Amino acid sequence: MVVWTRAVVRTWRCRPTNFSRAFSEKLPTPEAKGRNVQWVFLGCPGVGKGTYAARLSKLLGVPHIATGDLVRQQLSSHGPLALKLVDIVSQGQLISDEIVIDLLSKRLEAGEAKGEIGFILDGFPRTIRQAEILEGVTDIDLVINLKLREDALIAKCLGRRTCSECGGNYNVACIDMKGDDGETRMYMPPLLPPPHCETKLITRSDDTENVVKERLRIYHETSKPVEDFYRKREKLLEFDLPGGIPESWPKLLQALNIYDDEDKKSAAA
Image (cartoon, rainbow, N blue to C red; front, side):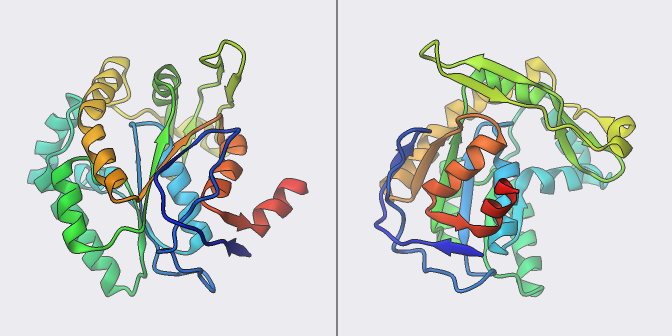
């Protein structure tokens, strides 16, 4: 069972030990799964947008739409657009607004035709222009901006693996670092595959250290205006990841004022 609370819209920053009580009156309390959630996940490449967006998608019963997945689907299609995308991705460049918007528009239209209600966007918008276009198309309830220190981000990106058979996403990196204060520990255990996937793991062609660093540099240059765009509209939640999924997930739910009864039961088991 998922329980929500209601509060007032504010832009706030959530750290592991000090959460604000605020949330949004604009978010109606859902009676069941499938409410018209229209959320966006922002954050550096590799921060975990897909992981947390997918979990919330399942919890709330709305589709998780990752623009990165839309691009990779095109890359595997071997069409004219795929050839263009290969050059862009291999150089660590961001996909143009026109391409991303076209792919997303087609996905939203297909979802509407299937009767989907709401969405959680992952990796879009990345530019002010994209944010402005999106605002003209639909009302966004909330923008969740995930934060993680850069050295941990790079290690996470280099540890990413995908099962070539089932498509499952895993991470072989074990991150154990001291916090910025020299005392607080950040621990992110590896997310290892089940035995039947171990021999089928592949690494994304763009997950090299140079490409990852270039992606981060470009992202930082373009992300601040987008964050400010939603901050001014009082829709931005900035959440500092305190560690791996076991530590971060319940605190993210707390920041969103969502109580997941099933998650509590599984944790206690």
